[in-house]
Length: 333
Image 1: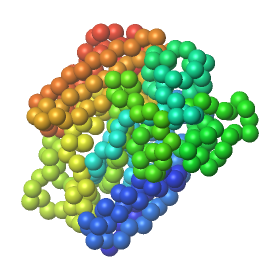
Image 2 (image 1 turned 45 degrees about the horizontal axis):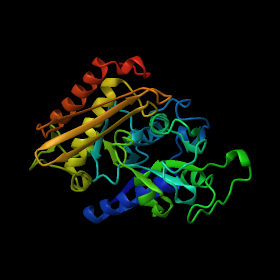
Image 3 (image 1 turned 30 degrees about the vertical axis):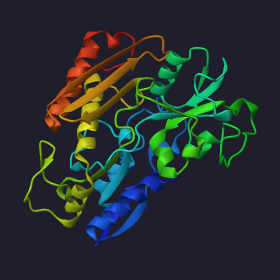
């Protein structure tokens, strides 16, 4: 038996896909083959918002699954639209890596230490808004590209293979990236500061991976919990074995909030859920793009089921809307 695993072709995508593939192979005892698929987000240029935000890195992988060109597809969960696709299912959500954002700055500077007028790069409106709220005196620069391309715009970072950009206008003092990607690539030496959620809330689903498959190959679940004794194939059993229940609950709450706000991955919305004992906690923030206005709220539930997590996200989103979040943020709600 051989399982074909669809992936984007970037260094980060290939690395995190290989890590999941190795786990599946070890559990299931089958061979795996990586199938590289070029997505719209890999081909087109421009900011994430200009490209349409959510889904630009996902649609081609989903098409490949439905066309039987691969058996599973690996996504960064924060890139996955909240609406499902008929015929497909989230077969597994492995344990989440570090969900925080990080600053990668010249000379090891922290955000507080950057001089006024410092140029900080990010392609995320969410990160940009929270940066502007924390440091209105810095210049936030919209950037695209893979991890090495972004790091290459900051001269002097440890292990920076790209060196200084040839164009002086491309030089940045720092960039903001996801901690999880740098951990998976083994590049954490470039991090000068980890942003705690109190300073910068991550994107819903950040740090987690989604293993999507055809619905017929997915583990049998009821309310998010695996059904014991259900007849399942080797692939479904392997997917169930690498799934992490607490991560599934947390990202379920975050994505339910995002869906209720009708906000995509390009919206200035941050959310982070985590289980502590018998409770699931969810923090969320909605910002104006210029960072001058924001609303941050928290809520918890003891309903540790898929339905309970989704209700938590919906209820917190309703609170944000009731307190005027849509007045200063471009939400579809």
